[in-house]
Image (cartoon, rainbow, N blue to C red; front, top):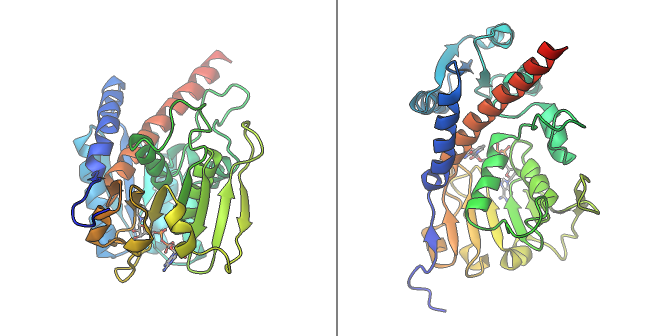
Length: 321
Ligand code: NAD
């Protein structure tokens, strides 16, 4: 095959986000109140400030109210508790890092699960890892919340047609091989689990090793399986050419995924804020998504509407009793 002209397509996050944004705007119009997101900023990192400004603009553009509350890092705990108890606050996000150590995890978990728009509460992670899709079994009315970035990736893979809609729900990635270069607790590991729970064989690489995630033994809600792969036999270089999908999230401008490891027609997605692929990836990738931020924020707003729906279900039930 000639290496001169791209035969595939670059797909922008804004294109993928559009139908979700339309659905979200419709959802907000149906409400009798304006949902409010509070962003808590307790560091002076300019990147966090920029992200906060961008989140605010996006929320306001789609019918939500956004309040940025800045405070000293030692006052963050109190600010969080206030927001948790405020009935006029529907979603809360904190811009991390704050202390840059385990205290950040404590603060993250202090956000009420009912207001955790980013889906980072351990309850939601536990459900994700255990393939539990509802919060209220056996009624199964309140859907569990998924962390925004892994959820955005699922929606991107659906949009790109990697999910096979003819197969049963929960097995639509059957037979697909996916490489994910990142195993952070925020994105890479939950993403590997989600895709394995949907039937994919996932190779999860980080700086140290490579692991394989596959689905549980049957189509019921079984937890995925993880095995450490033998580094003599498995590496990014040996696995990548066999994969249908390659996803990267390496937070370094110096890191470039080697284009020659990518087979022609592969679906390629970068979620790092750094550019993990050189431009010649377009000569190899069937579909290439260079960044995903706009889908992630759409998922954050979608999560907020889901939290509001779940609350409405709980309120209705409480009224009946
Ligand atoms: P992190 O630092 O917690 O994790 C980085 C991961 O990459 C680790 O698993 C590490 O082992 C792995 N890694 C680093 N260098 C590697 C290498 N050379 N080979 C293989 N693996 C390597 O970071 P994070 O929170 O997962 O964020 C990663 C990137 O994704 C950042 O740039 C962040 O800004 C971006 N991000 C984007 C979104 C979005 O929605 N667009 C959301 C979250 C994070």
